Image (cartoon, rainbow, N blue to C red; front, side, top):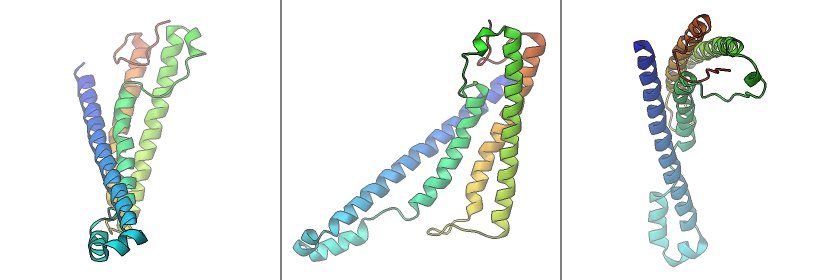
Length: 194
């Protein structure tokens, strides 16, 4: 099905983008921790006493990345939302099948419809609330404490991921309804043939 391939491509692209952002955040955190550790080391009395001029110069050179917590906070929020479309389209969410595996295929497909509708509703609600939060942050021109970037930027990134997830969630809800009505598998994942 062409639309399913398009949705899968979008979901995979978002996951790759989320992985790239997460990798950059890991590198940022490592650099910041190393800089903080080096700066602490250079402040030891032994080092400052042995090479005072060099220690002072290096103390001004090495240190944590300014605003690392702010960048990680915004980036992690985006990364989480970037991974959600792929998780949604592949039915990768956690599930407990200990009871449902005893049901027949029709009941399990009905449960998939209910779950799909709930996910679509929740993801849409999250996207709407992020939009309202972003609008509020834009209105009041709120910025982060250290590096002073507008907070709405972080909301916008998260909103982008949440909106894509909502679209994929709505698509999957429709797919699950069609699968229930026809008893055919359209999208792989979460279908149970008992």
